Image 1 (cartoon, rainbow, N blue to C red):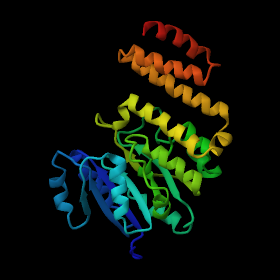
Image 2: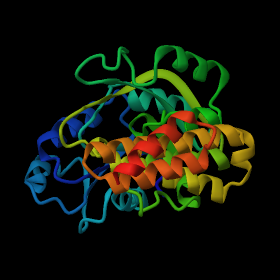
Image 3: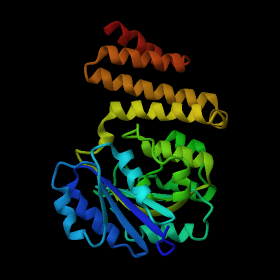
Image 4: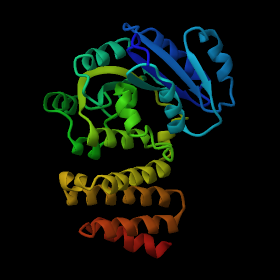
Length: 300
């Protein structure tokens, strides 16, 4: 591993040629310049390769058949020559202070597994707030530290705002390649359970919403979210004790309720019935879920 490089920036991309140049430019325009930029093309069928040609002297390019974002990120991390890895999505933008802020912290705290910060929406305020992590919560996280409950209640970690120890990443096996949507949450759980994790109250990236966002596939997102929570509880039994059984059951049941609601809207009565039945079995104290179960099961 090269001792001269501080950070390896990994961009995994799939058919995002229309956004990719802006993303790369935002990385290359960093105030902090001691990094390498690795781009992994996960089997794109658009003109991604042509878009990357002008950057050939400034990036390391790798191509693989389409295996999903987790596999592409792992490919990039395997090629990394620096002790810290920054994983960027190919449609978002880094703020110019991104690496300066995050590396400025880890160089004095080399024992941590990950440091992450906040972001803003590229199109301006959304959800009645300026930042992705609301200001009040951001201040609390920075002041009091990150708890498992913070990760569990809301998916606050965006890897576009993070710097990860390569040693920690490798020791955990990187991303779970069976996950295509909730891989960031899964990795954040595993990093938190094994290494110190720190939050900084800074905005270091801009999130771009568009029609191609994979997060808009609610059924798949919720299904994977449930899998990730179940995986956390299976692999780290102490997590349930830390979180409390009631909190865990409420969260899982709510996910199944959301799954049922979405399936009903998409005219899948059997799928809705199955999901709401699971919500009730996990959290039978909810009268609301029982009422929905009665109505939706009779429609199935």
